[in-house]
Length: 169
Image 1 (tube, rainbow, N blue to C red):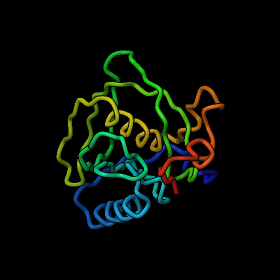
Image 2: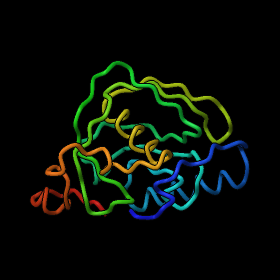
Image 3: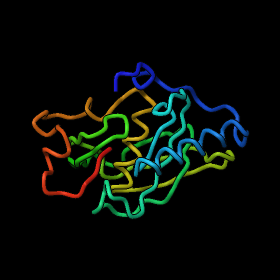
């Protein structure tokens, strides 16, 4: 947190299925896996491109989370379905060691493309919707602490959850 790139709007991808794009996605995947992340956006590794990846199986940072299929999402467009929002704890690889309560839409329709230029069109809810919103915020220069409404619900993971096995960095 503090890197100016993380506060900038990322550039759209104009060419798909290129060696450069595949290399970027591989770097993002390796970083996400090493940090036990639920997702990561290209700006988080220093690249201003509208690319996110996400997916959750058994993740020690989110032990109670539902599974989210591994997805490469490029040039995403997000549209909330309804007005229902839910508060939930979030962490971020760019804000290590901290968690905060963030309101997010509970249902979401998103579109975009995979790395080969094939269209993606999904209607999702709950944790899947939260992860997509969090990652796509990175493409618009928004970090989750900017969405926290009550800063009493923001702090260091080990202080907020002293008896938990949740690791955050």
